[in-house]
Image (cartoon, rainbow, N blue to C red; front, top):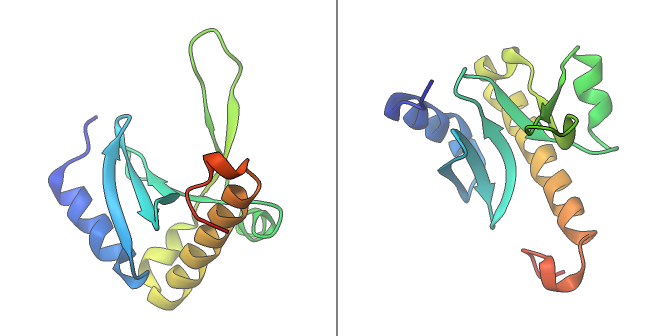
Length: 123
C-alpha cells in the first residue's frame, strides 16, 4: 500500500507540535526528521514508530508497544531502534509532544555515538 497525500498531511499536522520537523517519503514509508535526524517513521499501514534507546524503551514497554524490526531477504530481522508508539498519543497533543521529543533526544544520543565524520549534528 502506498502512502497517500492525505496521510502525509496528517503526519505534518500531528508532528507540527515539534518545531523544525520535516516529513520525507522514503522506502515505501515516511521518515520524520528534525535537524537532519530521523526520529520517527510512519508505515504504509498507518502505524508510527519512534526512535528509542535505553532511556525511553521502558516507556514503550510499559505501554505494551512492540519494537519495529526490518527484515531483508536472506537476512535475519534487524532492530533499528524504533518502537511503535501508543495509539492513544494521537488524541493527546501534550503527551504526543513529550514522546516525540524523547524520540528526538534518542536520535541525538544515537548520532553522538557515531564517529565524528558520520554525525548529522555537530556535538
